[in-house]
Amino acid sequence: MSESLEATPVESDGRRRRGEESRRRIAAAMLDLIREGGISPRAEDVAARADVGLRTVFRHFDDMDSLYQEIAAHIRAEILPILEEPLILDNWAATLEQLVDKRTRGFEKMMPFRIASDVHRERSDFLKEDHVESQRYMRGILRSAVPVALRDDRTVFEALDMILSFEAWRRLRHDQGLSVNMTRKVVLNAARALTSAYL
Image 1 (tube, rainbow, N blue to C red):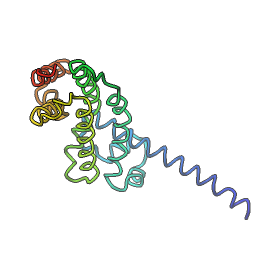
Image 2: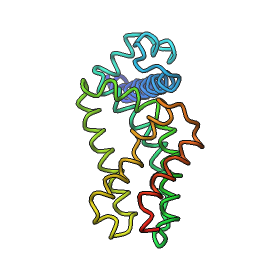
Image 3: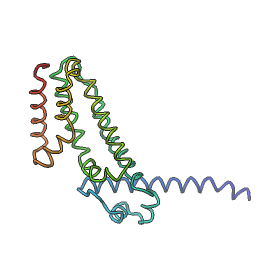
Image 4: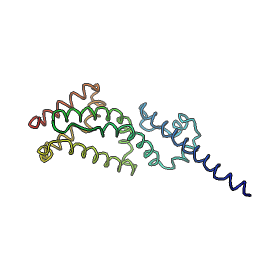
């Protein structure tokens, strides 16, 4: 009996490791399908890409929010290092260019997931909360970067927040079909024109 009891933790660890590996593969498969343009990948497609059974997909993600959370964690791991790069704060012209450059890289990485998540947000408590938190986080970065006088000018600050938003980036890139470089120029020029008094 003692040998059986000693084997149980080992078996349990093995099952846990296999479960974690399956979960990782499923999340990676879902993310790959979204990046390839699949706004709503089917569970069958996720299972095939991850090379796991359909039951395994549903066992690891018993609701869609748990799947969205896993995907969001992957996206954040890619984007946060970009967004958290230090800014030059003693020169607004340089700071503004840095902000646009960082958002260019970050928005391009997150765009497929954001397009997909926007479609499903109204049916997902997690995506609703994540959207609110993302907006708060991005506005916080902007508030800490702009000159105090600009921050206190509510009209200018809100307009700048809109120009530098993902929604503006997506419209230029996705709806109007501009290249990354042209979109960056449009956003930077609009932000410069708006905040010319502080440059």
